[in-house]
Structure formats: structure tokens, C-alpha cells
Image 1 (cartoon, rainbow, N blue to C red):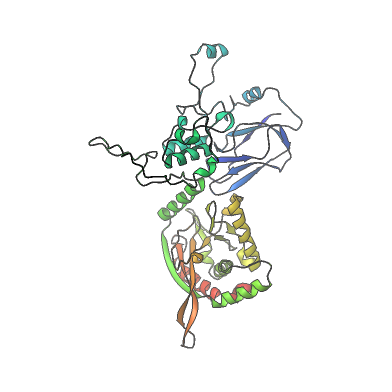
Image 2: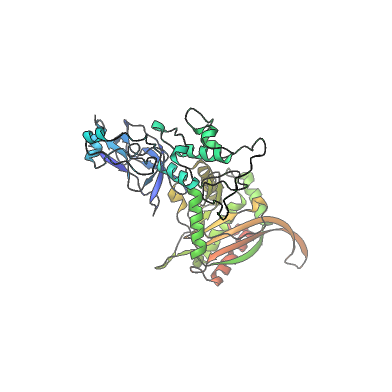
Length: 455
């Protein structure tokens, strides 16, 4: 029996997602639990697993297309079943035609309506050839001020896909039109997916003076207009848009207040050296800081909470997010139950998250939860900075570099020590200033006496 496979809501509250890749070909069977497609959310790549044994009879959404949640993406058949007329099956299921081809937007951006009959179709005047494009490609074209006729599609049946638009934008930024730079028919680009990453410098300065605007006319500033001095136009990725939206919402809705602290980390560095000499898992300073934050959460449970409009949610376990600047963008996966895990277990989890972030294999569940995040720019020599809270969490700890400084020892003598500065950003709706100050005191104590984390 034929069934429709719909785009699932892989991220809470999402209205659309990108179908990044099909892992099963048409007319191929699969078993329950097998991954059949890869779906890209705002921050992660999620494998869509089969709920039952079936056969992929037909694909309705091409790889690279953005699909609304709940929209059909494929037709499934029971194992061993086959159909001769897929269009007839689609009609029975309430789908008039394949969205991947027949219902794609044309040159004017509107969807083609099916004709009422063959006779009417034959009598209709011949229409211009329609140009098909994925929803994501149409969106990128609109943002860049390009039309479908400016780009040559390399997808199935000449369909315009994301890499075609990125190549066209890069070609225009390099100093020519899409057609002049190898994206028109009968031309090829070595690798259009990489053109948007680096744009070559012109061989010589442009000698043709720009056309002056008419008297009284305002200069064009729409998305597609070339701007003086701009060498490259880079379309926003879904991840970049998601990060921008979340941080903007955080600064607008969460009243931030900030606490600055410092800690001597010489004892921590010495303990780290000893551990790494015998441990199979290499432990970083950041791993110690994650454990120190969990220790402080245990001592000050008021910090282990998040604000909601209806009530405050206070958690029993310390789930700490860690900011990772991956090759795909900034992500903040959450290390669960840090308070009950060993230091080596935390280090292994963070290492795994880094690998998954760089390869785009983080699951959406890895990015959800937690009450605070640790972000560390010390490896770049940054001494001190303040970070924006990652909603709905209640705090974020910004960590700077450890530097040799003169300090006064307990006996009153002057000595040198490695001092690390941190800034704690706190949501004042969820945490009072006194509780945040006690948390900072417990955190710095654990950093300066790292054996507390191992007890």
C-alpha cells in the first residue's frame, strides 16, 4: 500500500527544514531503523530513520531543497510491492503532481496549475520554457537580486540548485555577470560549490568609470546592487541565520548582568600535566572548567535553573554547554550530567562533539537543554570578554587566557602566578546577583583547588 513520507519536525518549533541528502535510491528497499535521508536543521544534520520496512517508490523533494514541515517528500510502498503509474498513485494520495519537478516555480516565481484536460492543454498557446529551481535556490536568488534566467541549472532536468546560485553570486562578485563567467549554457565551472569561498582579485583595476546616477536620484542599495569596495557577497547559511536570531532575541529579552572574576590556575595546570602523562584521553583546560562549573552548580543550585514565563525550572543534574567554533559555524552542544562524570569522560565527550560539529553530524538533541554555556577564547590570546547568553539558558561564562602576573601570596609576599580572567553573563530574571556572586566564588575556588573536582 502506498504511503506518503512527510518532512518531520526535527527541531521544536521549526516551520521548514532542508533535505540535505537522500541515503536511499528510488526503487530501493530498506528496513525499519535504517537512515533514509539527511535533514539539515538550523544547527545540525539529522538522519531520518525509517519507521518500518518499505521501498522508496518515488522522491518528491530533491536533495538540497527546503521543505515545509509536514510536506510530502517521498512515496513509500510495502516491501515487494510495485506500481506502474506513480502519478496515478500520487493522485490517489491527494498529491496532484511531483513537487520536485512539475510544481516548481517558473520564471515569474508562480507555480504552474495543472490543466483541466488534454484538450485544453493542446489548445493553449505555447508558453515560454519554464525554469525549475529548488525553494532554497529561489530564496538565495531573491536575496542576491538575481533572477532565474541569470543562472544555468546543473540539477536534474536543468533544475537550479544551491551550488548554482552560489556560483553565480561569486561570479558576479568577481567582476562579471553570471553568463559572462561560465554559468550560462554551454559553459562549465570547475567546482561551483567552492567558488563562493574564495574570489580571485581582478588582474587589473577597472578603468571604466561608473555611471553617475541621474540628478536627484538615490543610489541603489538593494541586495543585488554592487556596493563600492565589496569584493564578495556571501549568502547567509541556515546556521548563521539561526545564531543571529537567537542572540538578537537573547539581548532583547534577557536582562543581562555581568560579574568579573579571576583565578590562579598554576595548580590546575600542574594537575593537568600529571593526568595527561597517564591518561589515555588528553584533558584540556576547558575540560577542567566544565567540571568546575558543575561543581559550582552543586554548591549553588539557584544557578542551575532557567526562566520560563509560567515558572522557574531548576535542574538536578549539571548539564553544561560548550561553545565550539566548528568549520561549519558556532555550535553549543551540551555535556550531560557533568557533576557525576569523570574528568576523562567529559574530555572524551567534548572531543566527540568537536568531531561531529566539524562533520555536521551533531544531533538536534545534542544542542538542546543545559542551564549555562562555557565559551573560551583564551587560546587566541584574548584576556577578557563578555558573551551573550544562549537562550533559554540562564548564564554563559566567558573565559580569557591565562597570563603570568605578579600576585600577593597568602603569606603577604609578592610572587608570580598564572592568572585567568572570566566574565559571567547572567539572566537577571532567573538568577539574583547574590546567588551569581556565590557561584563565581565556588567556581574560582574549584579552579584554584582542582582536586575538589575529582572528589
